[in-house]
Length: 394
Image (cartoon, rainbow, N blue to C red; front, side):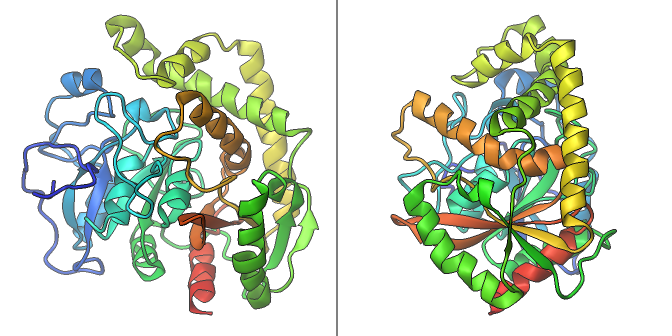
């Protein structure tokens, strides 16, 4: 970790040399790694003192991290994650709350809190995170960063701690689009579904209606209008299947069942002291029924087909990343949980579909960042990055 970490973004592990290539496409960049990824010479703590105690020192580096090292990027340290990656607020009861470098009085968002903090605080150039329910997109929105939830399965999560494997993805953060794309060139490979030069832009009215009105006015009148002037007017559509409640609960049933299968044995054996919110979510997860999960999986398959049919091979949703700017650090646990539950309704679109969503730092409201997203068909990740370059250059 850096000798000076004013943002409390890094886990204070003893420094161990992590070799990287002397040359390569990322040779001048330093990067942080969310403490879910194995890095040889370090433990993997997962934001949990119990997991850390059981970890031992890893002897092999996760392939995704190794790709970055082989491309010449320099390892800056392992970053704080929310406990067991099962939160979206960025406040770990055991390791603290990393600082939001773009708005010091507001939360970073989680669970990739340390990674977003490190990048927004200029402690490294980019950082790896994971996104299950929104853990890259939410911090990207809150901290004024580019952040991608890739197509599910596109970037390897081998030797990375799971939360909900059918929803988990590996993403990353950067302050500028040029750095962001350089990392994408290393991690993504070629698009399976490249978008054409002229995309069909869609305006999901039901998603925009989820925003707080003042933030919506800012994002809609400035950034979203600018994108449409570049790419063409967005066609109004509806994307929600059945209702927002149906989207929310079916996502939660799948995520929670898988989270309990992943971490339930640890919780039952060691009875770790779980932080606020995390404890309640795992307690709830334990009681999700087979009937609920089976129905939720069927709902997910139907929604994925519905969204694939809408987007085709050339459609892109233009949508807000989150309902609002980041909540204040002083907000109550109850209000943070309310914000999280509102956010999941918006974020679960990409999660249920498994499609890529790119959050771009496009606006500010009340002194805090606000993200605008592009969501494309499965396998269009690099095309979305190319669109972000066009938007940033316009």
